[in-house]
Length: 227
Length: 352
Ligand SMILES: Nc1ncnc2c1ncn2[C@@H]1O[C@H](COP(=O)(O)OP(=O)(O)O)[C@@H](O)[C@H]1O
Ligand SMILES: [Mg+2]
Image (cartoon, rainbow over all chains, first blue to last red; front, side, top):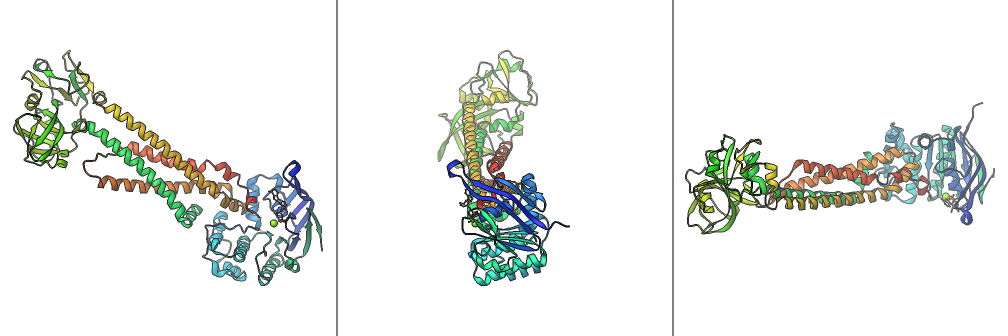
């Protein structure tokens, strides 16, 4: 039978600092994400959600444990391979929105094409995506000219643009009103259902619960499945 | 190049200032080296224009044309070819009733020898009589013109300017070309003296007289009064200027790169390879330095064209090339000093 696991995490520990200032942020995390499903990880601020997500995507390494992305063990491969994996398989929607400050919205997408040496969407497809997110009119603006909610939606479009197999989203709806939350929630769910992607969202926004296939809770570094 | 260019376009003020700084520094280096080289040339312009290879002087004259004198009994033993020319040098003060006095160098010639024959005039004609002279263009800045009659030192004899020549300076003073007999008059010498020395276009020319010696032009020029001291001062001045300028440019580009680290962290988080960031850094440094240098060269050319004729400025292409390549290289090196930081940029650092 085909392995439908996209991300597997086993016995993940993460500690920061040394000696007396040492804090353990993640404790023995077990987590699996599957193709065609959207997983939601919920927890209060400071519970370790961002740390969990960046470890899942190979942006930082765990203190102990194993992360596999599409069966490739992240900790065992060289940095270059990890970069390539991130560039080709994973779309990050980060809390800090990760837009390049000196590129316009349009150029953010063009730049992805340049780095990967391919055009990922036709102009019509791109416009349709931007329309869904209500940011079509912002195409020629710089990130500094956008509101928090607009920036967040551009960051979402930017992450989805290269059509990644796995989408990792950190508080993607933090700055959005309820109407936009529904749009983003439906967009992410459709990606999982219609396009067979694997979606992992960490958030403290309970409004996203209705869109998820699996919900996990993270508290004091421990993770448990809520439903 | 895409990122490098977009970033410059987006932050015009910041990058404009950096280009402006490189422009000013390269302008400073170009102009100062041009002025130093121009002044150095005024020591030797006339000698350079003769195309001399060697100078024959009295061996006890300390390699100085001014101090040397050849007697008739010596010159009778020498055989001069088409490549040799007598020269009689004397420092003078030239004056004319209506114009300012000019400190000049009198060069007495036999007008049938090669220096006289080859002399290129910018206006007028060569002397046909002993009381006619050709003077350097430098006299024009004191408003001397063709047909003016001038006196030398305290002598009562008058001489008429019949021609002007360009780039004729020796010991940083304009040259007055005249007759060897005038040289004798100025030096108050009897007919038994012929000239100060012999200029030859043949490096191997042998005078065949024990008291006379053949000096290479390089050795002769180095012994010109103040020449090597002056050149050493300028060389050190420009070397220090270069070193400090290069450090300043390197520091600026270093700071520029450091300021970019957060942006690079964003790009790294997206999976953009470090290699792209490093080449972006190099490309941008090259763009900025090229831009600054190009404008610096333009401004230097403009300045050189607009400077009054009396200001000596001359450009030595090998030196300029070294300066230019030096600035380009240090720009790139400065931008790349933090390359370790670029390679180690932590994408997590931008994640809240
Ligand atoms: N690089 C780090 N160094 C030290 N402590 C960190 C670092 N990153 C995160 N932490 C700590 O780990 C805990 C969890 O952080 P984070 O994963 O950002 O939580 P969340 O995203 O749920 O708000 C916090 O207490 C935070 O201070
Ligand atoms: Mg967080």
